[in-house]
Image 1 (tube, rainbow, N blue to C red):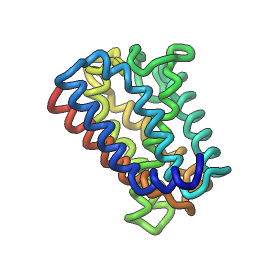
Image 2: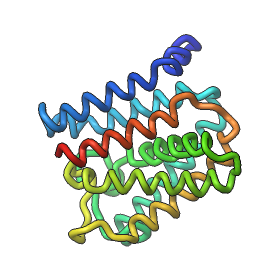
Image 3: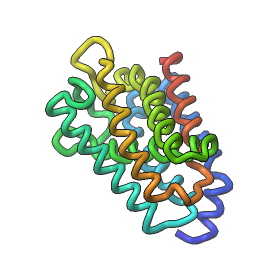
Image 4: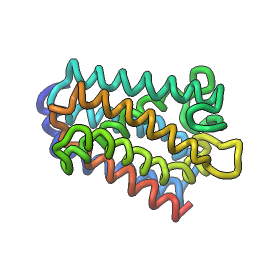
Length: 213
């Protein structure tokens, strides 16, 4: 896409993300629950496009980081659903769209989005790369803490147990840590004007849904 479009996204992308998720909240809570749930994969893909467009470089590092996160996340979910490791015993619903071996393809994109958002937010706080890596992984777990109750209501995934196991959060931290290490070796020195703002958009989206659904 052209430089003008990239500039537009860099300047207005956050407002687009806010609008997209605000419509999602109202749609899920008050308009047509099933319809808006089915839009989840579309929202994730649009969010990924916006974050990539807001990145200062198209290639190769942003694509390398995306591929690493996608593969790590998808493989972790694939192993997790088959064995219960590293997250616990769970299975996916239909809300996240097309799946391979019962794992939605878009879940890899979701891992990429959360890893990138957390990494760039923490980068604003710490200069030390080790602290950046550790705290960004913690932030990804913090996001999941708010996602989990809503995810089951939306039929993203379901736990075999009546509660979210502690193992899930430990597994999330381990996978997140690998992604944050990859971040340091790929795009940590590059700039993205949208990623840190995306973190707060997603966090508020799920915090609000925890209270309105």
